[in-house]
Length: 300
Image (cartoon, rainbow, N blue to C red; front, side, top):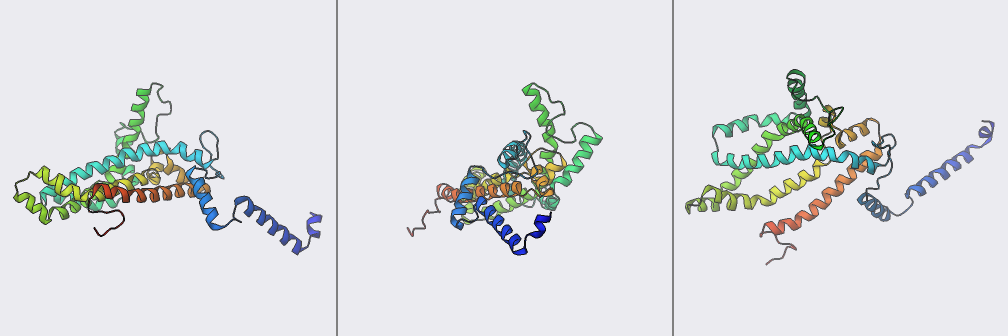
């Protein structure tokens, strides 16, 4: 303590500056920006995202890579079961609903579409109260029972039972607005002149939908599905937390609470790279599925 008091202010500032330079060199912050960017990109592609400060994985590791890889499968199960099912169900329902514009079911979907503004976790609370607390037919939360069965088939049924409520809350939350949006989208294309010409030729409704409505909208549908697949892996943070689902969404929520920036930045970086890669490949997919799109923008 006496030795520290004898050190002058200039010496202490010099020691602090030397320590800062040493930490910058250790972290690679003294390198050029482009070199650092390439290095960070390469590390992110290899999932070398550093170490978490507070959080640890189920196996005791603090590596962000291990934490993400351990929590990713439950999230993919929940989000895949709910969002992929929601996408295809609402797509075909909207296509069928576009044939009956102004009908009772059409008006019902339009009326109920504002209910999708309610978040999924809010629906989840009501589902827990009804099916878990009142009827006692489904579990309150978690991914499996406290003492899960050892048989694989029984374990699968146990996980499926725990999956019903959180997946249903996500499905219900986005159902009506998805049907309404896609129904409106199909109605726009069904009013085109070439659709009227196809009807005049006597083509069946199924042929008209497949060749003259679905085909022009295919690039948009593929884009929606691709972006859906990018968003799936981040999970539903609050919904997973309400149902105590051990996925990546719950992990991100805990990381925000304890200010574990390594986990937050790691998950954000991976999502950004997945989005960039998806958008890049979508340009080539457009050229395959839509002959009107030309790669290179040639005038011919």
